[in-house]
Length: 206
Image 1 (cartoon, one colour):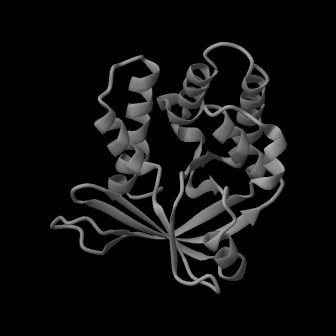
Image 2 (spheres, helix red, strand yellow):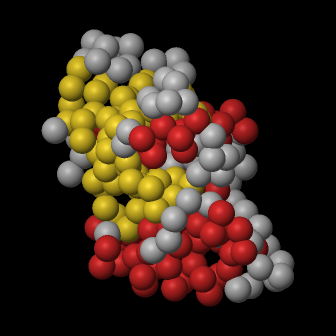
């Protein structure tokens, strides 16, 4: 299990924000934007494309024994793309399957996943060097450095799941999935880089 400090910020804080959105609470945009920092780290890579940092949306995934079941739920929702309130219904399903208290034990907290939409510097570097650092920052002081080993998936269950999860809220287009590779980041080390007494690069995992 990840350290409580990071888990509370990266998972539970986001879960609470998604729950409030699902419940229809009128949340100030400033709070939503700050809450998104748990989802959008800078992904730092190095290779022939140079030392690079790229902001990408990222998230935890289900454990292997649950991923097919949740993917089936996603695909049933994606099939209703022509019906009203698609995004609202999708967000509710995402909360139920990934962020609700009942979902917690189904999450694999050893990995994070995202999609490659640009195939630029990150794409080039990770083909050559799988080492990556995810740098999270929430103003004014919170920051975590998550060092990982990356995997590139152009097909298979992780590729399909991450594409489907992206399209649960955004307008779906499965025809594009074959051109949207997925990255899986296996967490190796975490440092608290926050500007606090216990931060400034203190290792907190493993």
